[in-house]
Length: 339
Ligand code: KG4
Ligand code: ZN
Image (tube, rainbow, N blue to C red; front, side, top):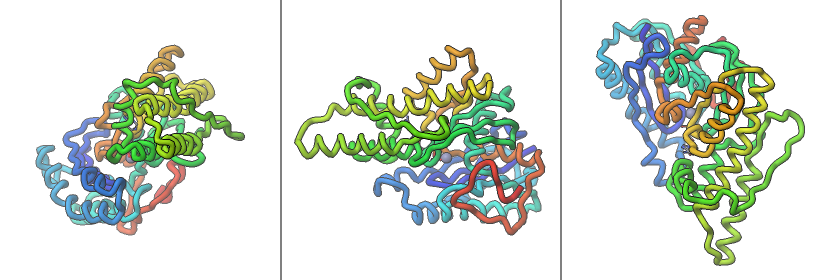
């Protein structure tokens, strides 16, 4: 089954063709990152307009590079939530038009479910149930993936997402947007013990996370040093910060593995590219004899192949949308309006 998948929820316009949920025939991306870098972050209206310009040609390119025709498609899958609303609307509208014109079923996909499904592409033998740590620019959560379309949220951030904090601290250090990768690079030569970072204690669900205290402490540290004219040890600060984020994420993830009894941990989202977090997850899963699935960097960030993968499983579960499908800025991944 060939699915044409469309993703436009943030600053990447992406169209892919995915066969039977796991075989990527093509994965085309038109990234707007360089453009938004001029402004230090994503400018929503510019993102929407760029999606409008790029999407049609990108879909043609996808079919051409996949070596198939429009008639070879069996369904159209699209990210319908969550994301920048103007940006998501462009992809949804395009997918609706394509489904109508080609008379193919339309399958809405939750963006975070897509991030999780990137693991099905990277690990063709991976099947639910498994535990997934989702860490992206907008989301940080621990999810028990009971089945391809059945999810149970075990813990979530109470405030900022991990990626948001990486980007904010990186920006203050003068690194180009999105700064997570640059901060990670700088951290590699730094001493993670040099700058003590706060440890936030939360009441309630022990698997919930909080990153805002860490973000504020880092911001204050940078501002104070600036005011006093003191030089900061940038690699050490980046290493201390990265270690602190990992120290929030990794112990909770291990506790979730123990709580659920799952033997496989999958990781999803752009922050999964972080070298400290990857190393800590690798060490801790090995220690427990659990399997760790860490998709390659290309599949961790936003792409349409992951939407095609999840779209396939949603299709198999009977999920369809009509021409009245809407786009949604926010939506929990375990309660979808179109099911
Ligand atoms: O999943 P993603 O591509 O987009 C969202 O759906 O949010 O994640 C992007 C986030 C950005 O915050 C970016 O700075 C972060 O992932 N990121 C990293 C690294 N590479 C990307 N954060 C830390 N270390 C990295 N190596
Ligand atoms: Zn994403």
